[in-house]
Length: 231
Ligand SMILES: *Cc1c(COP(=O)(O)O)cnc(C)c1O
Image (cartoon, rainbow, N blue to C red; front, side, top):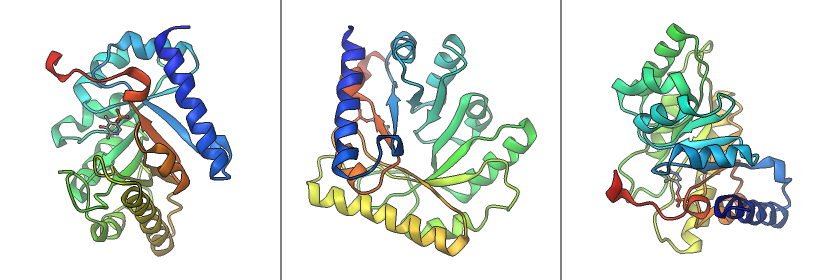
């Protein structure tokens, strides 16, 4: 077995154990393999080994990889989306985790209606109020959801957050539980089901699963350390 498929299996075992510990079925949490900065061939190898969905941070990288890999791969855009890249993003992304303003949401809906795309959307929330440059403040989430027309072609299916880097476990529990509580409040207030919680990365996904994550975004533990100097 190759290093990549070894790593994937090790992460799957960690994820299955985290689901068992949380008394949740393994099928309740989707593993998103974050392939950013790694060659398209690495994602291709893992897709052949049974990994169906991959995350990219930048539209440019998504545009480079998606066309040279099997069309059955489900691509998730997880990084900040600039307004002028929405059209390109919608060409390949089945999910966008990083919707962080009412303007961006409106633009995605308009272009989705125009092009016939139906991406699933998550609102990115800066729960901890520190570090991350992007993401809505918790109190902005409900007003943004209320701008969504009932017949929106791109449904908002949940919320996403990034935990602060190197935070202690208590803080991580608080941040992830905070996103879940916010989701519960927004779902009750709007009647939207909002089933998805995209939270947890290589270093903290067990805690996120304990707090109700439905999508963990794992890069380093599968692909190895990223080398940004090559970009
Ligand atoms: C890079 C990235 C990840 C993956 O992080 P790892 O620590 O490498 O697992 C997850 N989510 C987002 C938004 C990212 O940009």
